[in-house]
Amino acid sequence: MPGSGILDSDVLTFPPVELALDDELAAIVLAVPLVRDAHRLATWTGVRAVTGENLLSEGDAAAAVEALGLPPRRLALLWIVAVNGRLIEITREGARSGPGFTDPMEFWDGVVMDVLDRTDAQTGAGLTGSAVIDEHLTEILATMYSVRDGMAFTALASGILQAHEVGCEARPAELRRLRLSLPAELAEAMELLRYCGLIEIAGDLVRLTPPGVWAVRRDLLREGHDAPSLREVAGLAELSAGELVDAMLAGRASASAATLWLERRVPEEAARDLIKIAASGNAAQRGTAGTILEELGPEAAAAVREALDEPMMWRYAAAWLGVRDLEAPALGGGDGAWVAVDTLAALLYLKPRVDSPAKLDILGEDLLSLVPEMGAADHPDTLAVLELLGKHHPDVVVAKAARKTAMKARSRAH
Image (cartoon, rainbow, N blue to C red; front, side, top):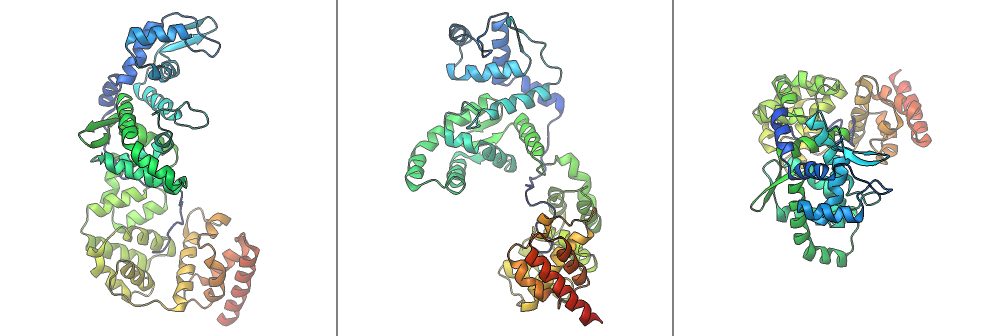
């Protein structure tokens, strides 16, 4: 559909989540086993000498493990959480009780960052005991965030294997070994994440806890992704199709708001409303409306088929139907150039106007072969798009071809 990838292809969109109230979250955080043990370690430490690396001495570490009944491998994480969370203060003289924290959720955010930092292969000491799970842990948590009803251990294991095979180009021998070892490694890793307060386990299902949802969302937002709360997008779901499209173009609504908007409407009616905006609006409105339409399935086919009579939409309607294996008219040779013009024309209507080299390259290698045909495209923005490419495209060959095609288009117009 039109406008795909125009705004920011690197931003991931996650479904809206319902967050618990801050007071409820704070109470749960204080009861997290990792947090309780960090408090216990701080109390046990009191005033004590530390090593040159600001750690407990070997003897004190062994004594703390025995006195507090801790697994030895968890002591390093607990010490980091206690120190970074200001439960323990390090001075020139050694360790002593710290001032603590005033905001439980800011403290919790720091705890989760300390936990995830240990998965960094270069700077971390390892978290779960499995290098593969550590490597993919942020992906695992993001997947759990998207699937609120929980995920089976088998589905998690399959996802990790697939991610490792594709992302890390794992060899067959390594994958065979992982298939044997991963179930036990995953079970141990999930127990650790439960101890850290991030997940809960019910039978074969694993899901994020309320503080886990809060923390993963905070991390996704920090990375620039679209991860709204249900409260943030609930009002947007009541907008008209035109208002929603304009709000998305202005940056006041995200793709996740569009998902909720669709969920609250009959698919066929939603499609008709969006098509009306796309057919009568500019290229940016058409692109945004088309992106929302892509989320609808065959239940909207009747409305989309009606759009075959719309001059500005029939090509997209035909493509929409064809992708879903529904009967659709074939597109001709010149239609690809028309769609290319329309896709790039969306940049002309964004505010502020987009003319950055990266955005102009959204059609990739196909653009050079399409430019000569663009001049003949019966589109109101043909000349403006060619001029945009001629002035700003980073590839000098494409820019030169666009200027040449624009000159021919002007000659034909006169």
